Amino acid sequence: MESKLPVLFLCLAFAACSANQHHDPSVVGYSQEDLASPNKLLDLFTSWSVEHSKIYASPKEKVKRYRVFKQNLMHIAETNRKNGSYWLGLNQFADIAHEEFKASYLGLKPGLSKMGAPPRPATTFRYANAVDLPWAVDWRYKGAVTPVKNQGECGSCWAFSTVAAVEGINQIATGKLVSLSEQELMDCDTTFDHGCGGGIMDFAFAFIMGNQGIHTDEDYPYLMEEGYCKEKQPHASVVTITGYEDVPENSEVSLLKALAHQPVSVGIAAGSKDFQFYKGGVFDGACSAELDHALTAVGYGSSYGQDYIVMKNSWGKNWGDQGYVRMKRGTGKPEGVCGIYSMASYPVKNATHWGA
Image 1 (cartoon, rainbow, N blue to C red):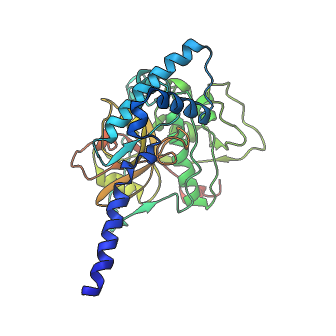
Image 2: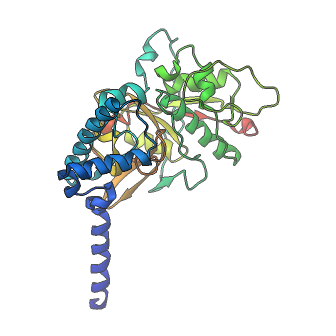
Image 3: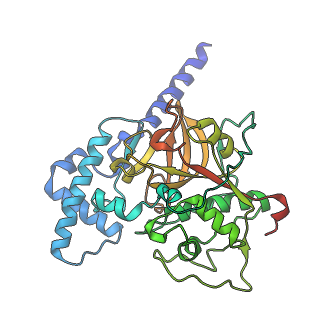
């Protein structure tokens, strides 16, 4: 037993260091000395601008953005000093004021379901009786998740969340991972959803069903803005679904049951400064008051005693952990952190439609 103690000690030390690595200034790209020096702050802004290809229309605009950059940097530093379970970092949004950010990059509109849409009959939850769930699931490693995409300055998160979920169930059903078209939803799904003006995933699933499928991203590429709906292309392939279902509200176990079987579209309250600059760790922090953004849950697991759900975002790989965020679970709140159990749904693809 004694011979194993040094090894055990080393393992625990390594775990502790790994768990606290976000306190290393190199993780977020600056030190306390940088924050105290105007010259270093300006150098940091300059190098950040080059890294993110920022070009400003005038010296006045550049000065304005520098001020916003400093304010955001101070928020990042102050949050990281709290030694929480997650940490923040500079990303492509560092020169954008928070109100501007919310207006341009969030697009989930739960209220649309109450504004003229026909009432929807209650759906079943096919995974209600699922038991013996795996302790961890990650659909990225199962080949059911396409690379992280970027919605750009457009409130089209609802389309990206929808498409990621359909890409997932299509791969599970057919064995083929095909990148699908968010732009088709932007241009053609306009009865209740509103392109860059926002939408919800259930309406988009219903559109795909009524449209007899959705085109590939290659055939109908993303423009980062609304366009005209293209007619069906005779030789272009489409991916179909046969239905969609809602996950029971405010039920963590129900979301885990669904997620054990396929990626799931999820609405969250992401309109906070902490979420804007999330860099890594298990997020359990500040949230906005209402659901305002859509992501796709692609797995769940546990790390250093922190249970989490892995979510794919659509703000590019420079945001978060290579475009992903781990949301804390097991908090005891029925709605979950940032309301992640309030509005979740997934597409259905029956075996008879596997070839399409």
